[in-house]
Image 1: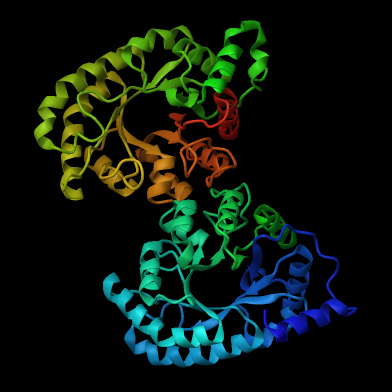
Image 2: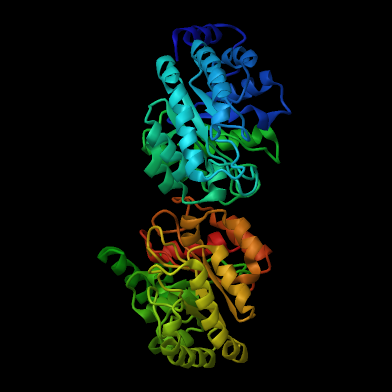
Length: 276
Length: 281
């Protein structure tokens, strides 16, 4: 948190329009939520609910939306960095454009107290994993200094290529960790999406433990289906959250699933499950 | 199991009228999923006590019990639900053609004995790779299974090829991915040759448990369970939610056996009671 967000937060807390009393949480894991999963609500409504439930951040919102959530004491916990899922860092021809986007987005994020920006490998389209890896490293090497200077973490997202994002290249933790290892910056990490990685490789807790130094952010989701993270699906999220806290992870852990039941209930339950 | 839990458990089963020490009669089970267990789930309990407890808890059989103990199973109305490997081992398995001639006679003999005893399944293991390409290993496994499937069909017993993890527990074991095992099954194409899908091992190797089970149920003849990481209790201390997994297995129309195979860190009887309750869908 920088001075600016601190003051913004303080102003809200002091004002009459502050969110209703929030539910007390242990808060050892800073939980967030992805905006797109709760599109039935206005952003204002999502921010209000999130603050009440004890969430700390909202992922994947644009700069014009940041003040809306900051008003409720929430952090825009993951925002656009550069590239898209299909067109990313694995192709050198994308690097100029991504570097330009990164420079703008990182500066803006830093100025607003936003801790993370997202980026992607892009699809393979025939590119070997070895070449894709080398290109991602080259691309990230071009922007890591900006991130280090501004104190913002670039997170390369891991996604499944089996069900949701066919041909996406960053679809294995080992591959992503190797990229981070070579870039070797405290400001370049992985976004480990538990739902996506359960589809691709399983062994969640061991993988998190062995790669925690390369992980900057988490996403959740029930599998199969990407719905509630409750007892209807195959992952037991509480011990996973406990394992993360035990590793002294200090970043954000954001829910990213589309509720089939009542959204308010689904979100509250998710926060409770992971409040360890 | 520590000495302490052993004696506590032994005390509980020894005092017949006091079945209540380890928890009264277990709650009635729905029993739609037929559950079994391996011996290891009970720690070092004498086999006779283990069988009595297993029957009381509602288990249908015990996996991987040596022939000499089958009469004890029978005494307690339990099945020998998965007969152990014969003529080969986990590391030296059926993936080497040059070993087939040596494996076949003891395997056939054991299969016949198992069938005569009423055992529903007998296990086979791929063996380690030792540099053998996956394609060649699959072909070799299929060749062996094609030699013995007729006997299994005649005797009404299912040969189950076990999937194990090669990442943590069994480095270099070849049958370590569902797709590879399914490839073997397709080449053999027998209702009496299937996979033993071990949920613990496959969570370590590939995840996506429920989808994988649904998509491959016709090739699965048996299940094993355990918590991950650690291979202990299947309760809320580990990353898999076993109840929806059991539900998916049942909903897929599975009629075989679902066997627990973990090493308990808590009281074995209590843990087994809980494991059965979790999967009693």
